[in-house]
Image (cartoon, rainbow, N blue to C red; front, top):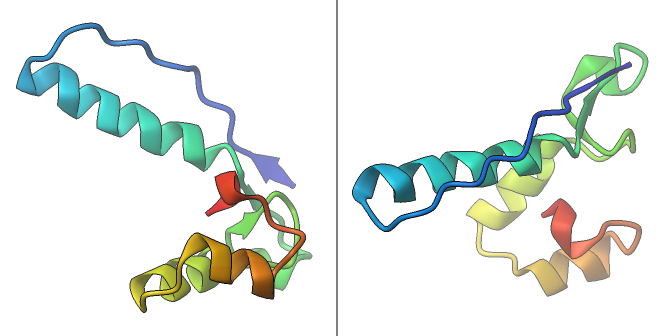
Length: 82
């Protein structure tokens, strides 16, 4: 299994570049919840090593499901996973 662990980034300021860097840093913080294992769902990106593909969660959010609705359907997920 391969896990992504990226350093935390702290950017101070309100310039467009600082805001852009903060948005990128927030994405990287979320990536550390993804795991890739060839023995779990054929190596697809999964949430924390569980058999929940990242693509499934992205699809649910893209189709209007709220975090609360997703948690109801998948109670073993945490809000931070979504």
